[in-house]
Amino acid sequence: EAGVTQFPSHSVIEKGQTVTLRCDPISGHDNLYWYRRVMGKEIKFLLHFVKESKQDESGMPNNRFLAERTGGTYSTLKVQPAELEDSGVYFCASSQVIAGGQYEQFFGPGTRLTVL
Amino acid sequence: AQSVTQLDSHVSVSEGTPVLLRCNYSSSYSPSLFWYVQHPNKGLQLLLKYTSAATLVKGINGFEAEFKKSETSFHLTKPSAHMSDAAEYFCVVSEVGRNNFNKFYFGSGTKLNVKP
Image (cartoon, rainbow over all chains, first blue to last red; front, side, top):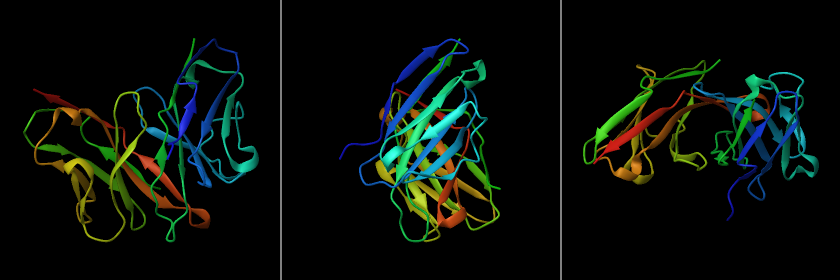
């Protein structure tokens, strides 16, 4: 079974440019999460999709970030325009739903974003 | 709200000696707790999880963790370190939010170095 994949693995852009990150979850997983780790800090939740719907986007830093999951399969996270403080590693995770609500999330390798 | 404190940012042990990675948490509810490991250029992999069953949890690769409610701790241990254990380890607290979906809160990570 293929795991969670993310593309690109690395992205270097200049301040003011736009970048789109992609995540392909494990097939059949309705839940898809985005997280971010800024250098030296902990991994922080950004948002959560259930199928194509945004269940919780309380972690999105500001309106320069736009996440989509059209059709409930892969997801994209667009940053426009990028700022220096957006640099970090962006992780995607997916999961199934199990009764009781506590279940493992499967993580991708992350996309390292560097904004110059 | 949940929070997680990993008390050591770096731990160095010799191969064959015990490993102890410390984690304390705060939680308003009965928490679920996880340990994940990240090897270089890989996604986060689940080591073990505690979900209100046995307080001593056994995971993969010989790791285990003990949930101690009175100490609000969930320390990760292994009797004998192997070179392949060198990686970054994350303690995670899960909160069940709206509509019974869980939300992860990460510690800042502990980098484990294993010396030959």
